[in-house]
Structure formats: structure tokens, C-alpha cells
Length: 213
Image (tube, rainbow, N blue to C red):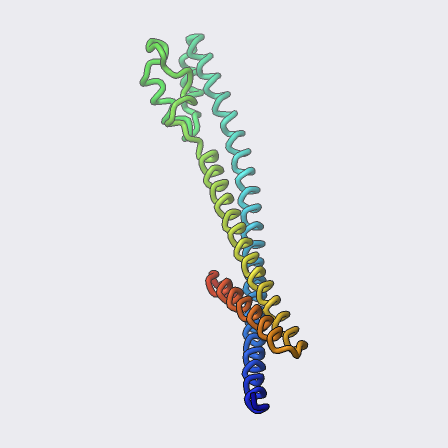
């Protein structure tokens, strides 16, 4: 083979090597940037989830305190009714909180003293729905969803890091193939670099991209 043809063919190899190195370097930078953004989103979601759980716990504790008062009021009403002190019973009934009133009215309508199998108290009825308990459950559900979003962000960040690692191997094989002068070895290493670069780029481009801000 004439020397000119060999040099021309080696020139194309150098161009391919430079292209693979450039593409791998640029995509690695982009992958690192995206991984950092998703890590930030993960941290924000985890922090938000923790905040929601703190609020949920506070709301639930306050609701349970109010619930204890409602139970005490109902017990006092029940004792007054049993003792025939209707005025005192009416006094307690007038002070039932809004959470207890609908369930109490529904319970009285069932005539529990005469109806077998009737609920023992209004607290056993589905109409008894303490607002604080319901709100705490909603906050806990939001916390779970936010934490799940943080986990997904962490998974995406890991995949970007994985793509960057694949591209790093492409840069390694592209760089080391320039050391060898045996043409066949150089081509094999370059082929490995091209495949690694293609895999890394494909991995990164198929992932969701996050915009800053």
C-alpha cells in the first residue's frame, strides 16, 4: 500500500478519535450537570417531605387532644342521661364540637338503647370524621408522594451518573488507542470507544432533562 494511502487512512482514524473524545467530553459535562440538578431536586423533595411529616404529626396530636375532650364530653353526657339529669345532659350536649355533632345526631337517631346491634357510641360511626385526623392523613399522603418524587429524582441522577461513567470509558479507550502503533489494535480499541460513546450518549438522551431554576 502506498505510504500516502496509509497516512490518509490514519488521518481518518485520528478524526474519529477526536470526534469520540469531543462528544464523550461534552456529554459527560452535560450528564454531570443534570445529575447535580436532579440531586438538588431530590434533596428539596426529601426536605419538603420531612416538613410535611412534622406538620402532620403536630396536626394529629392536636386532633387527638380535641378527640379526648370530645370523648370526655360524651361520657359526661351519657352519665347525666343515665342519672336522669336532663338539664346537665343538655348542658354537655350544647358544648359538643362540630366534629362530634353530626355523628352524635346520627347515633341518637338509631335509638341505641332500644336497637340491638347499634353502635356503642357516635365515635364508631363513619360520620364521625375529626377534621384534624383527616388533615393529618392528607399531609402524610402528600409527604409520601413527595418522598417518592425524591426517590425518582435520585434514580434519574444515578442514571445520568451511569451514563457519564460509560462515556468516561469511551474517553479512556479513545485516549489509549492513540498510544498503540499497531493498526489492528488501534482499530479494535477505537471500535470499543465508539460503542461505549454511543451507549453513553443513548443513555443520557433517553433520560428526562431538568431545567435550572
